[in-house]
Image (cartoon, rainbow, N blue to C red; front, side):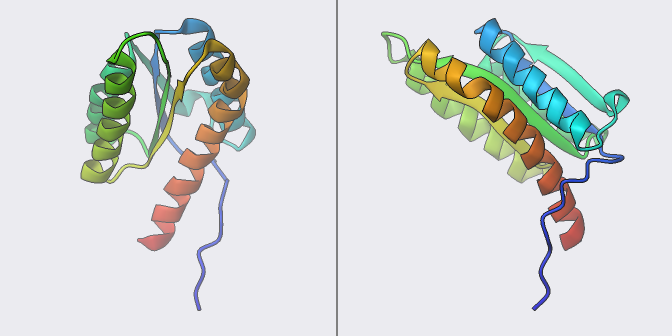
Length: 150
């Protein structure tokens, strides 16, 4: 049996990041952890492009344009949707996740989705460093996996 092994070598990869500016403390920390992991795994600073958008619902459109540009090997979505007192949380959480996945499937460019959906600010703060770093690893691994399948 041929097995494609996990590969976290980011050397030469071009990575695009779309970050929401809503919930800035959480989103900036997601970005910091993500960037640190990308660089630690060999992605050059000059090969990382960051685009910021107002909120989580705007992330998929920016990802779509990045994916269609063919300038990026992998993409990362960073944001935080924290439950409030209205139904708006469900709409933003569900639609942002659905649309990110649609972009990935329609364009064939792997997207690591690190749009946090939490009940409280404390939960978001507890997850921001780990999930930002994990998103970087997912993006690198999926680019390398798809290359191994080609």
